[in-house]
Length: 106
Image (cartoon, rainbow, N blue to C red; front, side, top):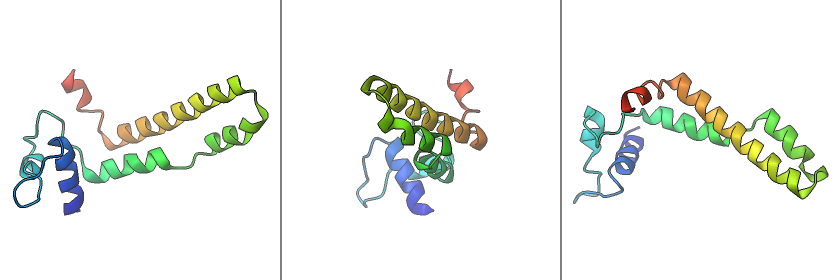
């Protein structure tokens, strides 16, 4: 869990590391004083990655139909599959409460 927090802190600090190899913003990320970005739970980020890579029965159905479509419709189908994956990510973000801080940023 500590490694995931350090990884998240590294991404929020722009990828720089301190003299001892750890992310200098690790303490800031844990205390909520990061660079103006909302604090995200590393577990929630892992769930987002899982939602992006999860198999969906609707996407599987569309991909099974893909070889039977014309090239133009295949491109539209690819866009539809991407939109379905984005929708799954959105649902996961909403369930984790990550969108609660979004209104504050606007």
